[in-house]
Length: 287
Image (tube, rainbow, N blue to C red; front, side, top):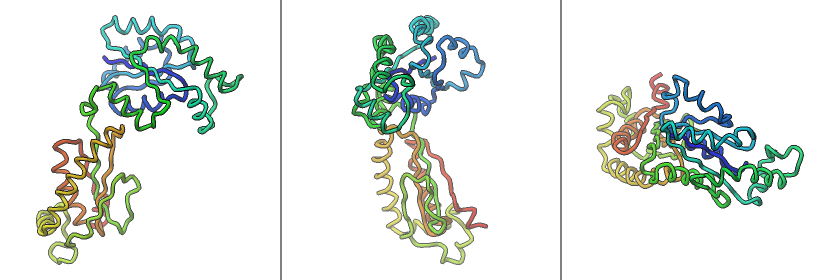
């Protein structure tokens, strides 16, 4: 089994790294005493929970586990498991600025100022920095850049990472744009089957409606241009560490055109991405 230990300075981005691993199928445990790792492995459900492996966040909140760390890590490796240690760091100035911005108290700062707490924590964690497999200096990294750095360390090539889930959904503008949308496409320029008496009771899931929508050359061009656009955009979002992207396609009522377009895009994109389809307003229109 793959083990990744995430450790480092408070405020350096450990939570962000943990979320990346969780999105990649790792079972993440925050602040678990290292002495309890053996008990964690004994859980019968752990293989189901940890699809990719186990990630454990270790920091200065648990001094006892810091002292026991190296011995426990050697035991994990000797048992045949692969173990890597990710150490996240940043300059004192950057850490002080982040704590000031978030107004959070440093875990060791109850009886000292923030600078002294950082100095104390840096001293406590130095043995882990020495044995770390990789050190992430997050001083100048944005959240997205840190996510990308973790993915690169995990897979060497982000293209080998767990595919990003693309959620294609149709909707009707009359009911509002879906709040969860990352990208919104408006297809109200296409011919509206609503004004065809024989097509009005049908939806974009029905062949006659799809044939009507695609009877115009601009619809084929729209699909071609949109597919090319998405083929460029989706890898860029993945490189930024995004694991889930919602593309919303809207027409007037969310019953005909947007449904047909979503189904057409899904048939193309599913060849290279994990795609989920949802027709938000189809039932509203039918009701």
